[in-house]
Image (cartoon, rainbow, N blue to C red; front, side):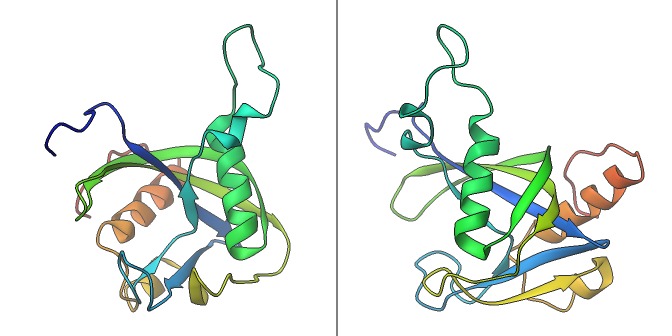
Length: 163
């Protein structure tokens, strides 16, 4: 990482969206630099513009920033509205260019809208149950997140592991 600021991570937030007991997955466009053609869940990078133009909720802080970013990203990427955003797990990586990335994985309920994919981002989508998810070339780790969500929906809390 050289002399990069070790505290400065790109922050990404993702959503495992639940509709009728199934999860939304999307296939990353073949022209994407990271994980082209692999299946994933919607989400995106948090930017300071996600809160800077808003008035602070307290003297010093903006609240609900991740939730707001996630709602915006999901709406932009797949065209639907979500609610009941809950934390699932966190993961980190160092990309090929040396930049560290922190990903905050959440679950959320589908509320409304029809799926409309952004062509630059994704070229296919599917709603899958846990068994169905196994048939797709998911980015490694996501299937285990689906298991965590299944557990959570049954009232059982788990940390990420290989299931």
